[in-house]
Image (spheres, rainbow, N blue to C red):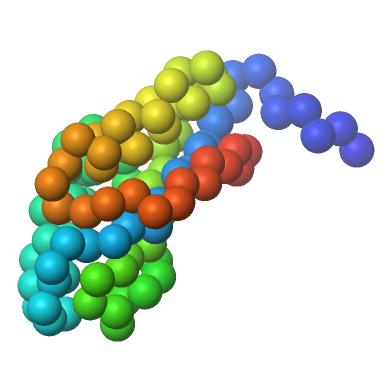
Length: 102
């Protein structure tokens, strides 16, 4: 069986980012901050969700996904997420993992 994706097939890439949230004192404060971060990611036309550390005040794991028509464009756009997070004052990026899904 061939692992090649046929031409014209969608490409799906994902970035998983672990964050340290500055000075969060409650889960309510964390959720408010996460809503702001996720809104900024949605504004870049990505899908995003908090997928880990939901009950920890100062940590979060975000998964951000993007579908496109070619890998060059998808991978270029995936680099927008860490850049956006590094510029922000809401959180510190602890770890980033990028994956090609299809």
